[in-house]
Image (cartoon, rainbow, N blue to C red; front, side):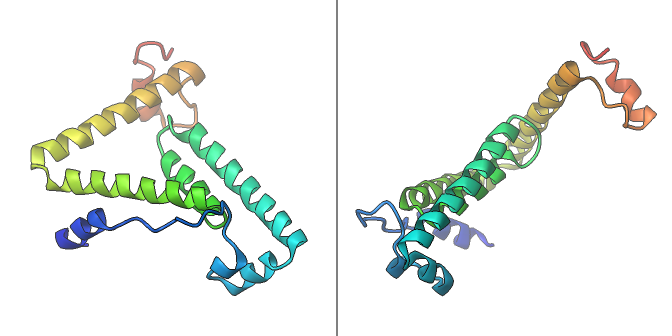
Length: 159
């Protein structure tokens, strides 16, 4: 995506969620199979309960993974996206999160090379500190190759 496209995304207006309902109704649904499910009260309740449960599990797993290296926040947003398929407040939260991410991305890309390098180094340092903390708590994994494992044992607290 070019710079003009990123700037346009950053200025994009959020969706209008002025509907007073908290739930997406059958008439509002874009997918015919979900509209059919929502047209019957019993299947609608069961489906929404399933969507809420699956979304909750995914959000909780993502939140547990946030302090660890990896896609913790991406997993949280996946759970929110699942909720957003049924709940309008989740749609608002998802739009807000996408806006924040878009503004961050636009800001970083507009910075000088040394700021970008600084952000990358700070990210790498944070990931390194998290791994070091994991090694202190759980120990250095024994399945690592010896040339990798031996230097990690030299870190303070990883004996």
